[in-house]
Length: 388
Image (cartoon, rainbow, N blue to C red; front, side, top):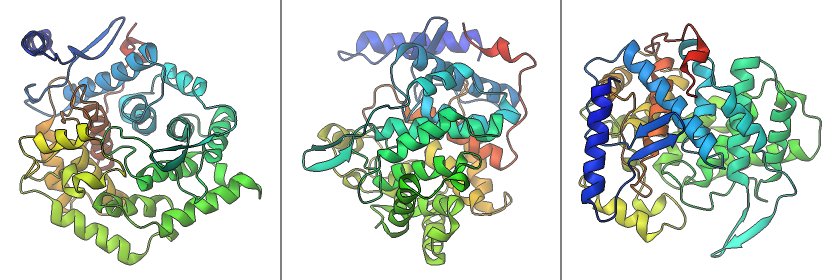
């Protein structure tokens, strides 16, 4: 990203900040040595997708994760979670992920006995979100960086499973960035992914409580009634991790939904996959009003998260890159990247920091890599890319 581009984005954001009685953030991520301007739909699109724009995306992901680690106190589903769950697999093309984020995950593993609580008539086990994202990030690091499951990852996986609900699921007990941690199926699927990512971990388990809990999770994932079409298409990802849990009919349904929802421009829209009140069992008025007030509420436009996820699901199902659906989606992604490296997307949660832009960027790079469309931009000196 050029200095002129950075200055233009910052000037535009500051102007909006001054004029808005409820000012939006000037920066999306900020820490010592890191100042990522707020995400904006007005940001210029790249003239050409390629090594330079991918380097910018890599820097965006790393700076966002490092700023969060240094300024915040939680592992989350919208920044550090996607960083450590997706970037390790991309290390042959982007370079190794930052060990500072790894250390934060190790230090964030929930400790102590799980506690079941009730809120507004809903029962859940507190700490399950953090436990899942810690375990998933650590397992992906082990899978793609070290090749063996560490004692920290083993501990994180056991802590994760101890926070499972009695029916075998993990309960999504609050609104976060749609579609992350919105339905119980999506959250439980993240736990299933963590279990399968840790090298040799599942096969090494002796009969006992943890293995019994995993069996309950698998039964729940197999038998759970989909909340919405987003859950239905996620059965393709479940089939990737646990093929025996998904029927041929469920896969055919998911493929049919994906095909029918692709837009003429080649992209897909997250909002096409659920009614507003079906994203979560208890939707706040803030989120409902936000979704209803978006200019394209009646006919949602394509967005990078679902476009990238659709490509990932198709590739994980064995669909070749040459498939027209994938080619059209790739074309959409390449032309929609912004000069900062991000793929802009309006938050479907609160509309302030637009962290879904970060999630979408990580997913877009994953989709491109699965299609052999991501150039090798590994730095010659890995230390040179780490902000100080």
